[in-house]
Image (cartoon, rainbow, N blue to C red; front, side, top):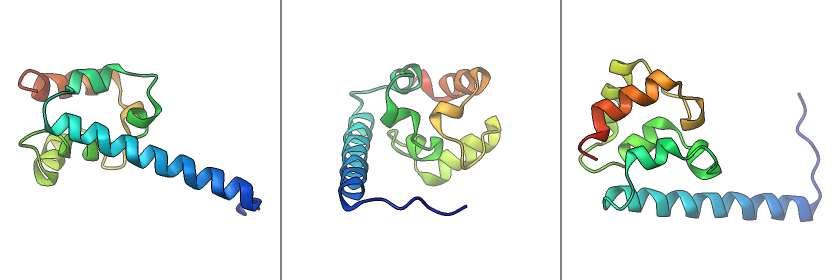
Length: 105
Protein backbone atom coordinates (compact mmCIF):
# COMPACT_ATOMS: atom_id res chain seq x y z
CA UNK A 1 0.00 0.00 0.00
CA UNK A 2 1.49 3.29 -1.11
CA UNK A 3 1.67 6.24 1.22
CA UNK A 4 -0.53 9.18 0.26
CA UNK A 5 1.19 12.16 -1.29
CA UNK A 6 0.73 15.17 0.98
CA UNK A 7 1.14 18.80 0.16
CA UNK A 8 3.59 20.87 2.15
CA UNK A 9 0.73 22.46 4.08
CA UNK A 10 -0.78 19.04 4.93
CA UNK A 11 2.60 17.79 6.14
CA UNK A 12 3.07 20.86 8.35
CA UNK A 13 -0.39 20.39 9.82
CA UNK A 14 0.32 16.71 10.52
CA UNK A 15 3.66 17.56 12.16
CA UNK A 16 1.99 20.21 14.34
CA UNK A 17 -0.66 17.73 15.43
CA UNK A 18 1.98 15.11 16.26
CA UNK A 19 3.98 17.64 18.29
CA UNK A 20 0.84 18.70 20.19
CA UNK A 21 0.06 15.04 20.98
CA UNK A 22 3.61 14.47 22.27
CA UNK A 23 3.41 17.57 24.45
CA UNK A 24 0.05 16.54 25.93
CA UNK A 25 1.32 13.00 26.53
CA UNK A 26 4.41 14.36 28.31
CA UNK A 27 2.26 16.60 30.51
CA UNK A 28 -0.07 13.70 31.35
CA UNK A 29 2.88 11.43 32.23
CA UNK A 30 4.25 14.09 34.60
CA UNK A 31 0.85 14.40 36.28
CA UNK A 32 0.75 10.61 36.71
CA UNK A 33 4.28 10.52 38.18
CA UNK A 34 3.43 13.26 40.67
CA UNK A 35 0.17 11.60 41.69
CA UNK A 36 -2.06 14.41 40.39
CA UNK A 37 -3.74 12.00 37.99
CA UNK A 38 -4.75 8.44 38.83
CA UNK A 39 -4.82 5.29 36.75
CA UNK A 40 -8.58 5.18 37.27
CA UNK A 41 -8.88 8.65 35.68
CA UNK A 42 -6.85 7.61 32.67
CA UNK A 43 -8.70 4.33 32.09
CA UNK A 44 -12.06 6.05 32.61
CA UNK A 45 -11.54 8.82 30.07
CA UNK A 46 -12.62 7.31 26.78
CA UNK A 47 -12.94 10.61 24.90
CA UNK A 48 -9.36 11.81 25.38
CA UNK A 49 -7.45 11.00 22.19
CA UNK A 50 -4.05 11.43 23.88
CA UNK A 51 -4.77 8.84 26.55
CA UNK A 52 -6.66 6.48 24.27
CA UNK A 53 -3.81 6.16 21.78
CA UNK A 54 -1.07 5.71 24.39
CA UNK A 55 0.47 2.25 24.70
CA UNK A 56 -0.41 0.49 27.95
CA UNK A 57 3.25 -0.26 28.74
CA UNK A 58 4.09 3.45 28.37
CA UNK A 59 1.16 4.37 30.63
CA UNK A 60 2.11 1.88 33.35
CA UNK A 61 5.76 2.96 33.28
CA UNK A 62 4.53 6.51 33.99
CA UNK A 63 3.08 5.50 37.34
CA UNK A 64 5.09 6.11 40.52
CA UNK A 65 7.31 3.16 41.49
CA UNK A 66 6.55 1.32 38.23
CA UNK A 67 9.26 1.09 35.59
CA UNK A 68 9.51 -0.66 32.27
CA UNK A 69 10.31 -4.05 33.79
CA UNK A 70 7.48 -3.94 36.34
CA UNK A 71 5.05 -2.72 33.69
CA UNK A 72 6.03 -5.63 31.43
CA UNK A 73 5.55 -8.14 34.26
CA UNK A 74 2.13 -6.74 35.16
CA UNK A 75 1.04 -6.88 31.53
CA UNK A 76 2.19 -10.51 31.24
CA UNK A 77 0.30 -11.45 34.42
CA UNK A 78 -2.91 -9.88 33.16
CA UNK A 79 -2.47 -11.05 29.56
CA UNK A 80 -2.04 -7.72 27.79
CA UNK A 81 0.04 -7.68 24.61
CA UNK A 82 3.04 -5.31 24.46
CA UNK A 83 1.58 -3.42 21.50
CA UNK A 84 -1.86 -2.86 23.11
CA UNK A 85 -3.09 0.72 23.38
CA UNK A 86 -5.32 2.03 26.16
CA UNK A 87 -8.32 2.30 23.83
CA UNK A 88 -7.93 -1.38 22.92
CA UNK A 89 -8.17 -2.68 26.49
CA UNK A 90 -11.15 -4.86 27.31
CA UNK A 91 -13.33 -4.40 30.37
CA UNK A 92 -11.69 -7.30 32.21
CA UNK A 93 -8.21 -6.02 31.44
CA UNK A 94 -9.10 -2.55 32.75
CA UNK A 95 -10.57 -4.03 35.91
CA UNK A 96 -7.50 -6.24 36.41
CA UNK A 97 -5.17 -3.24 36.04
CA UNK A 98 -7.22 -1.21 38.50
CA UNK A 99 -7.32 -4.08 40.95
CA UNK A 100 -3.55 -4.59 40.64
CA UNK A 101 -2.52 -0.93 40.62
CA UNK A 102 -5.53 1.31 41.15
CA UNK A 103 -5.88 0.94 44.90
CA UNK A 104 -2.47 2.44 45.62
CA UNK A 105 -2.38 4.93 42.72
